[in-house]
Length: 235
Ligand SMILES: Nc1ncnc2c1ncn2[C@@H]1O[C@H](COP(=O)(O)OP(=O)(O)O)[C@@H](O)[C@H]1O
Ligand SMILES: [Mg+2]
Image (cartoon, rainbow, N blue to C red; front, side):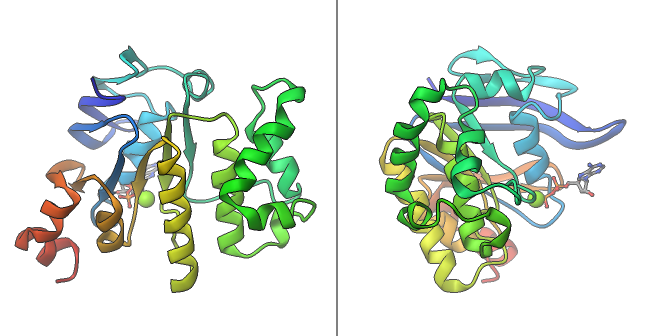
């Protein structure tokens, strides 16, 4: 039984259909990469899974419960958290305050313990816990965003372009962070422009183009597919 199952989903903005009959699955503790050209609908699919958009048709189940049509607040409570592509931290709050916002469903007494768990993944955040997120570098902000999303100990983390705009060294660091989070048992569904690198890390991947499924397979299969390479990996 997959942890997340997206089945035959059509969704968009108002009357504009962006996703057409999309399917996708994420198993427990799996890393799944979602790649495809700009405008393919990757972020739209993430938003639809997280309940920010409601599909026109099709079903989305998480832990075998239907979640399509549910609101993000309810979906978070089931253990599915989302880090959007932009505006993913509270810039005027400190690192620690950002983490506590991420843990908003927890009793205060549990916050310190959860923060410690998050700091194990991001030691740099522990050092900077009193710093305002707005004063931090792009890479550090991304860590704050991921850390906040981890505060509720989700079983599935949605990451929309976690490495966008970062230097190669920081991209490596963020990918290492994601790998460590996954090793702790958290399934990760990540959208990445850095397709090659994300498929190297992912157990499986999906290529979305023009709002439709185009290719899917294991990371290795997709990397070895000449059509995928030519069209989507710049190979
Ligand atoms: N809030 C919005 N309102 C209307 N159209 C949107 C909105 N966000 C994205 N779109 C459109 O949906 C399509 C897919 O966008 P998006 O899901 O962001 O693609 P990707 O993340 O793959 O680059 C694009 O044509 C984009 O212009
Ligand atoms: Mg996007």
